Length: 287
Image 1: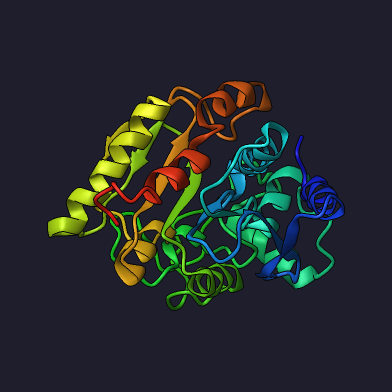
Image 2: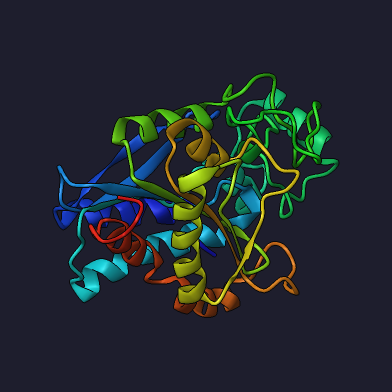
């Protein structure tokens, strides 16, 4: 099991070895959301995010190991990569540890009531029972599966980016001003790449998506009937390519067991580095 405390220990190891680490903000329950930066400052950068959904915590380990691989292999980056392995830190703790670590009895009562029990292994939301990947300000509340009341998944919140986690990631993204973002989810082995782009932007983003699809073997899928995601916000508000990558075979059940990690990692281990190096090449049409 890969826990939040394990992530903090790993981040501290990056720090001890001289790599930039920090926190993009805090969660509902005031837990820090860490990041690590690899590469060169002052050059174009991308952002890679894992575990926006609680039960998809295997993606946090994937993002962490993508960063560790770059260091281990001493790969040269044509720019920089900001890795945010675990955005939904409260939700991941619920999914992996249960309810016992939360001291506020009112919060505990509400979570158990909304979840209809104390097993949180299938929970997707944060500690406010908001699904973070429908809480961004891009077609907020217009997704086909969106709901406007507390649920373990699909609840959009009371307003766009009213959650500390989404607000922190949006602010961090605007501060970094990346040229591309990637966010990892489970499952299905598909890549979502579009959100109402038109003209040259549509074809540029599609050309990048095709490279990512070839590299992973995943299928490209249109984003029909879905809104409010981090990818959607990056495409609409920042006008940059952004991808939601669903890892793990569709036949697997949630939460995906760590016995599947090696297979997922082998497919996706080099994707951030390759995307950064691709998009920073002057010959690429996006530039």
